Amino acid sequence: MKPPQKVWIDEEGWNAFVADYFRSRIRSVQVLDPTDWRHPWQTDLTWDYEAERWTAKITPGFCLSGTGADPQVIVPGTLATEETLMRLEIERATERAVEAYLSEEPRVALPVIKWRAIGTDAVVVSGSAGEPVPQRFIDRGVVSPIELDTTGENGAVIRLSGLAEDRREARLLRACDLVLTHDRVRSVVSPSLGPGVLDVQFSQVNEISRKGPWVEVQQKFVRPGEGILDLVLGAAADSGRDELHLATFYLLSPAGAESGSAPDETWEPSVIYHQRWNLQYRATFEDTIVEPTRISIAVPQLGFGALGARAQPIVDEINARTAELEAALRRVENIGRFALA
Image (cartoon, rainbow, N blue to C red; front, side, top):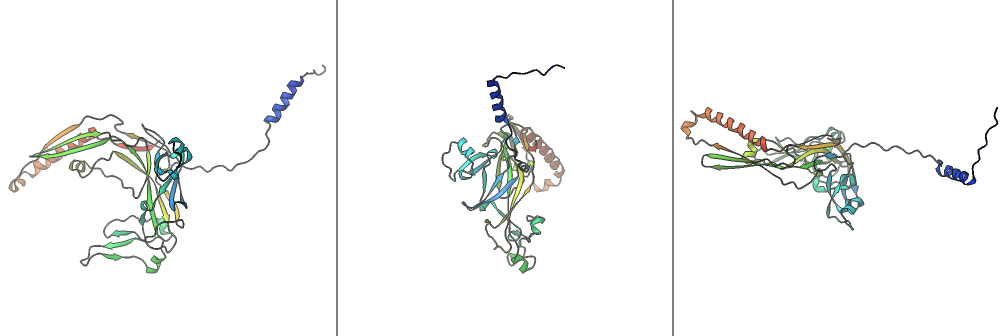
C-alpha cells in the first residue's frame, strides 16, 4: 500500500481559498410569504384622505395591438408615480392631468360625478327597464329604486315598494365602469338627398387621437348599436373607437344613509370583473385608407292613388338598394375587436 501523497499549497493560495469560502458562505435563511397571484385588471379601491375622493389602482394587464401593448390612463399629476413624472420631465406634481402607463402603477381618480345611483335612491320611469341591483347587494340591504309613474292624468306620481321602515334603514349603492378603449380609422357615411335621388358616399377618415390602448372610467358603459340605415340616415355615426367593459366598481353605504349622499370613507368598495386576462386588439384596416364608394338611389315620386298598385315593386327596390348599401359599407367599414391574447 502506497503512503498518501502530500499536497503542498502555498500560503497565498490557501489564504485566497479561505477568503472565498467565508465570502460565499450562506449566513442566514429567511422564509418569505409568497405574493398572492393577481389577475390582469384586478383593481383596489381606496379612499384618498387628502383629496377626499375614491381612487383606483389597477393591476397592469396588456393589450397587444399594432400601436402598443401597455395601456395608458389619464390621471391627476398628484396620483402619478415618480416613474411617470420622471418620464414626462415633471419636477413638481399638480392636479394637472398627465398620461401614465398602467405599468407605472398610477392611481386613477374616481370623482363623485363618475358614480351613478343603483337601487334604493335611484329613480326609474315606469315602463322603462332600470338597472338591476346585483343579488349580493340585495342581500346586504339595498332595496328597489324609486319609480316615477308618468302615465296618470294628474302628472307624475312617485311609487315606493316595500315597507317604509325597511327603506329608511336601506343602504345606498353607487357604481361606475372601467372600460378599455382603442382608436382606429373611422368609417364615414355622407348621405345627400337631391331631386328624386338619394346619393350616399362611403369613405374613411384617419382621426386617431390616442395611440395604443387606453383605460378610462365611465359613469355608465353603453354598448354601441349597429345598423346600416341609422348610418345612412344620419341617426348614428362611427365614433372610430372600440370599447371593452373590463369591470364595474361599486360603493355600498352604511345602513340608513341619507338619500342622495355622496360616497365617503365610510362606504364599502367592491368590484365585479368582466375581463380577467391579457388581451389583443385587431382592426379590419390598420393604417390603409380605402377608396371612397358612392351609391346613387332613385327615389320614386308617387301620388297617393298610385301607391297601392306599385307597393310591392317599391318594396323590392328598397330591399335591393339596402343590400347594395350594406355591401358598399362593408368595403370601407373598419371593425375592431378585442380578444384574449
